[in-house]
Length: 363
View 1 (tube, rainbow, N blue to C red):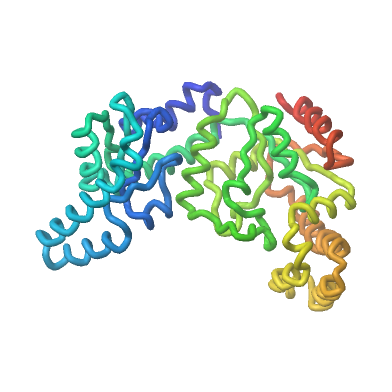
View 2 (cartoon, rainbow, N blue to C red):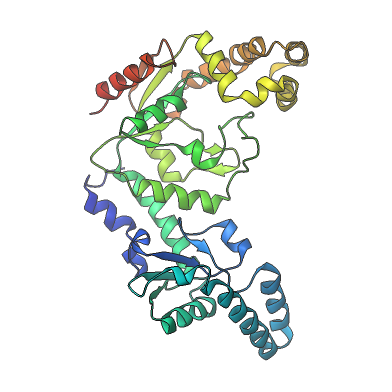
């Protein structure tokens, strides 16, 4: 597939909010999502705050009433909406000046948006309403995620579990390079053990919104560093265009001593270091793959409190063979592959090693 011209104007043309007949989202003093909290939780424009015209229960009541008595539904809806809008005027809206400009949207850009917009305009604010509402925004996100990945040069960090790919990505970002941290956006480390304690994954739509928001900020004239991922991270799917672009890109396979990999697991998977038995329970779906004997060995290590030995065994006897099989198949990638050795994941040498890596593969 041919690459698009590498310039900022191309990216802006692909995903600029002007396509939605509004200004850049960040230029507004306030972006108001007038939908119900349940709708907002599923997806919203990044940075928008939820000021629902009706809450979840009220929204359901209005919808139920509308099926039998449209007039009564409008009466109930307006009563709720005026009360809810009034409740926000003093604590929030009064903090802004008439020079501030607002963006308001609801599901289709209809009644709920207008209720907020009319009241704000009466106060004296400049207000834009997102034409077509969230549905139109969602179409724009999908289109952007199909077009935008083709505009970038990706540098893909590969390597076995625990080799420090995410730490390299974070260090690249700290040093000013462009990094796309997909697992951070997905709130998942991308394996059977990847769920983050107390951090549920976002919905697919909210992940898409966050992903596009990050990618729109990148300069297409500079490489974008990203960690190798499968098509799914936990329950979330990567956009086809992004996954395909990563598959065509140069891959830097990182190797790290086992002692450093075990140290990383102890630090990054502290919840499993504290509860190794719980970790083995999460590995039980692997029984048909690794065998009941190996699972029993892991449980013995866990119950005896030998977390480091457990971590090393899980890597060497499951994750590393899986990675080796994938590497033998070429990971499905078609780009160039290189090997990068990192002797330590600890400062200060780690930062220097990452800087050298970035310099060697910046073109």
